[in-house]
Structures are given as C-alpha cells and as structure tokens.
Image (cartoon, rainbow over all chains, first blue to last red):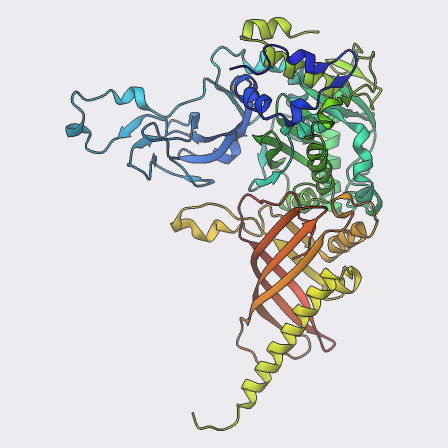
Length: 440
Length: 183
C-alpha cells in the first residue's frame, strides 16, 4: 500500500527550497522508496577490474539486496540476486574470489556462472514430471551497463538505457573515469572495499556529494592540520574555480575548472607522484584542450552512487539499511598503468582522507548521524530543512559544461534537483510518467 | 622440578614481559586520559601503524581474510600522519571527537612472540596481545572494538618503543560509524 498516496511532491517544495524531514526519518517512506526508487533506478554494482577473469565474482549490493557480479566462461558479465531460488539462502557468502559454480549450502542447488540452474539433488527421481530447470536459474538484473569499467544495473526492464538515464551527466562520468591523462586507457579498483555502518538516512550522503560546498566548515580541522597531497594546510589538490552542474535525472556534480595551460603544483609530498601527474597533465591538455582543466571533483548519480574524481579518486555507495541507517562502501580507483610508487602514495593518501578512519570523512559521519537522530521527534518533523541557497539561479548554462550550471558554488541547486527527482520517482507509477516528468 | 630457584633466563624473561605490560598499560592510560602527545612518543620515528580490513573468504583462502599490506586498509599511517591525527584531535573543532568520546582500553593476552629474554638497545621483538576497547559518546552511542594487536617493539636509548603495530579488528563490515579512537 502506498503511504504517500502520490503526494511526495508536497514533501519536496522546490520553489520554496523546503524539504520535509519525513523523507529522512519515516519508516513507511523508507519502505516505499525501496520499491519506487531502488527497484527501478540504475544502481552501481562494481568495476570490471574486480572480475577480470572468467569465474571471478564480487558480492555487492543493490539497495538492500545482496547481489553477485560475475564473469562467465565466455567472459560475459552478469549480476544476480544472491538468493537461492529453492529456499532463499545466499548462494555466495564470500566477499570476492573465483569459482566454477555457485552451490547453495542449504540444499545444494547449484548454479552455473551464467546463472543457469545445473544441479538439483535427486532431480531424476524426486520430481515427476521433472520441472524445467531453465525457469529456476538465479534471478538476473533486467539491464546491465558498463561505463569505462564501472558496472551498473537495474531490476526494471522498462527503465531507459543507462545513457538515457544519465543524460548530460554522462559527460561527468566519461571525463572522471578516464585515466588522469585524459585518454582511453583503464582505471582500476585499488584493492578491497571499505564497508561500514552509518546511522543516518542514505540521502544525507547522496546530497552531500551531489553538491554541498557549504559544508566545508565540517572539515576545518583537517584543513588546519593538512593531510596533503601538497605540503601545508588543506586536504586535496587544487581544483580552481568551482561550478555546480545539476541534471534532470537527479544527478549533480561539483566541477573544478582550472586553466588548461597551468603547470600543476600538486603532490609536493611525493616527487614521483608529482612527476606522474605532471606528465599526465601535459597529455591531458594536448588531448582535451579547453576541457582538460574540467574535473568532476565530487558528484552523485541518482540515487545513491557518489564519487570523487580528482584525488582521492573513489566511488562511494550509500546502501540503504533502514530510515536512519545505511552501509557506506568506498571503492578506490587509480590509473591502471600508474607506477607502483604512485599507487602506494595514493593508497595512503586516500585512506587518510576517506573511509571511517579518514580524517575528512570522520566528521561527515558525526554530522549525518546526529542530523538524522535530531530530526526524528514529533516536533522536529514539523519543521522542514532549508535548501534555499541560490534559489532562482537554476537555469544557468555554461559553454564548457552541459547541464544546468551555476558559478554560485554555494548554491543548493544540486540537492534540490536530487530531491525533485526523488519525489518524481515516489509519485510516478511508470517510466512513461517518470520520463515525462524528467525535465523541469 | 628440582625445587631450585627460577633460572636467570626465566627471571629476565619475566622482567621483560613486565616491561611490555608496563608499556601497554601506560599507553592505555595515556590514551584514555587523552594525553596524546606523550602517547606519540611511544612510537619510533619510523613507526608503521597499520589496521588492515577483514574479508569473508573460503577456508582454502583463509590467509587473505586479513587484507595484505599493499591493499586498502582502515588505516596505514606513518608517524607524521599519526601526528596529524593527534593535532586534529587537539583543534577542538574535530566534530567526530568534539565533545570527546569516553574510552577505556583493556589490554590482555600479552605474549612475547619471539624466544627472547633480553632486548639490547637497537634490538626488536614481536609481541602479541588482545584489546577490548569501549567507546561511548554524547548520550548512548557505544562502540565495542575487539581484536588483536601484533607489535614490533624496539629498544631505543633504553626504552621500549613501538616500531610497528598491526591492528586486527574482528569485524568485516565495520559496525562503528568512524574510527577516531587509537587502538
């Protein structure tokens, strides 16, 4: 049953820039968004470098569901629901690895890497007439897409293609997922995934990375002590002028724009890394020209996949676990052909910045935690959150960057775009209505 | 047993073990009493402070249930980075620890893992122990961090110093929202 009765738009007043606290704390709304957002939207699953060889698998999540990303014998990628069709047991309880098949530990139903059911106990004698095993393979996602190595999927066969889903947001993903030299080489996942529980609604995280320059005060302590990659105070490499790009699909990016001719002065703490990035930078300028200086610093692909695409370079997923709980995953990216010394430097820098022990991220979790808990009360829920910064400047355009772009970098246009889209998902019954709403 | 006195080797081993215990219990007090700068002095200048992650892997691959040194970790700090963490705690605006959490470190199961009974200046030895760390903050937020430590202790100018620390938390998905407590 629908608790919102088609009224999600009323909770998200984009004209006034006011958003009801109910959408962050209400358990009924949470349950409904599992159906209306997570069962329909495109979600990040993994990276092809994590399943490089046939038989490689990675257990991931799509919303609340456990899924398996695997590469079959022909090299084709699949994403399956990690639940046996017989009694629901997880058919894979390992985080990653390589296997010939998935055998359920409960009653031994066995599935081929392409999801086909190939083993059922006493199949010949117990089932008269025999049931059609072809109909009882692992549940597979309806659509799968690969953008420069990142693997995305949706359960909804009626969803638009991932390209259409992204719209102009494709620009940011395509640019950000290239190697730093701007070419067509590969990026790869650097090691294992950080996973941890945060007591907040997943949307706090999605909106934070969609574009919230105002929260810089959260990080003043780390900026004061300075964690590199350049000597002195601060915590990340130079990004120049900040611009915000919002997209009708609910996506948002904070871009940094520097002049493409500028000599980079980053990574002074590591001469090898500085030399690597300077060499990449020169190739990037030669390849991309005016666009070389554009970097998607942080962003969110609706609903819950965020990224840093400068350094640190990471993908962040806020998997929902309840109205006031989520599971954060940090996946770190690096240029595949970067020298080992550069990867080593970046690994140490990435994790002193991000993750539960990251000197930047630690303070975010405190804010999201207690913003959530202080919004649960009966009285608190009566007062909407304030998203009015930059109201009225939503229709900006830029010759450099597609989308609705503003140089008022403290604007809250990107969170407003994310919540507008969220409300459309909650209210629209089908993709026809959703795509019709996809605009302004 | 002959009933004779404890051997000199045994005595020096027990003395060394007591010295390790003094180091660890003193360290726990420094941390729980928030005396972070003297705590830093317990580490050698070339110290490595490493907290790998844990993974769910098959029995035959059990060696990789602790992430390797070249993998992503929860923390993998040198002393300058540890020093930055201490400086951040002392800014008074590090919201994750402002106001400060209440923390107790229980250190137990201490074992010298090498067969040594004396440690001369410049020499090192491996020591294992368990920790149980209770963290409580604001009103009722509580984390229980339980695990193992594998240290390399080196004698420097007469004093035992921590040259390398490997911290193994017994969780795969970390159930604490952040790791702002030294283990």
